[in-house]
Image (tube, rainbow, N blue to C red):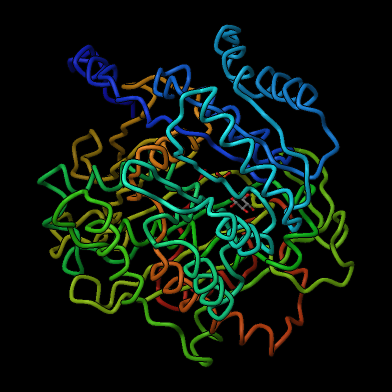
Length: 518
Ligand code: BG6
């Protein structure tokens, strides 16, 4: 079925809306801890460059990199120039690149070394003078999680986090935010001794994705979906976050974390809460997050018995992806050769509220699956009455609404249509909306919007302490049972397949199956 033709619509109007100017962010200095790391190289620097390209970086702006790497300021600037050339969209705007490099500084040091924070403080004061920034500082902790609290405490001790009227100080904290409920609570306590909640920006890069933000727009700016968005019309919801990559060079981190910690309490529960939440009273940060938090609280943490029947774990064996042989998880670099860490997880979640009672949410995520795809499928109940005798009811498809989060971003709706011919036979067809048809494709790292929001003080897309803790409350019982009962059958799925057999059985037991993803 061809996609809807964009020329039937006023595309210029859409383009105009897009061009509408966003105000430049507040004048500030961004301090990146972990400035020589992968996240900075691949995401943060290209995102800042893209913000510059869209004219929304403030004129009064500077960036300070803080890292342990033995680099002079010039070497750091050269490195960032290379990063921009490699990871920013082409052709490179050299004027913008030079503009960024002119305001780029470097502090070399250990995050635990108190004296280095004096150096940082002196440099920031000097840069405020030089770049006319008003003392607004955005600290980005792109570092291993064991440094989060330590860095915040040092900043606090040097009064680098004290706000005054007209002068803000904010801290962006990457994932993983804790490794279970207790550690997340402890981390919240430690950082809240120094910072107020409104200074803390717990980042989840899934919320930087346009299609994730579009879940809210789709649901709440259209009158036609909300009336059927409930247990009366919806049979179940599936969330799939599949990756074809393995653990790459991150075996050291991943072997301690596993798929459940790595993906579920953060990215996947974000997708679930946006799909399931009630309409907020406004798009204010707390109004949206209050509703998301209610959903997270309504997801019942499983009992140990439920973990056995509603949670599936898997680990990949060697296999073939895209025609290439790939090694087993246990043979990956920095992974224990006897590792019991899961690289796949599937869960059946129940949201105990009026809207969703008895509507299961099945989620699955894994590495080394056949392809990279993230999607949310809403499966509607069947039509109640068998009118089409030649098409047995079990052959009549369900209506499906699929939100394609990535790649091939878009939304499709499947419904039944008459197959041309002398008898009435019904076949499934798709109505497809593709982002690229309407809006083209804009190079983006997914961090642009999030960085911009930090610089203008909009915390809507960031996690509050209560949300992070609610996420961990859901998965911690699973972690506890899995720790107590190590898996006996790992590795239990071949690379290049859709995970272990048990994941299919999880749905089969309920008379359902995962949507087949081509
Ligand atoms: C990260 C996880 O948070 O998200 C990675 O740590 C995962 O393991 C990544 O690969 C997936 O992000 P994306 O944007 O590629 O879907």
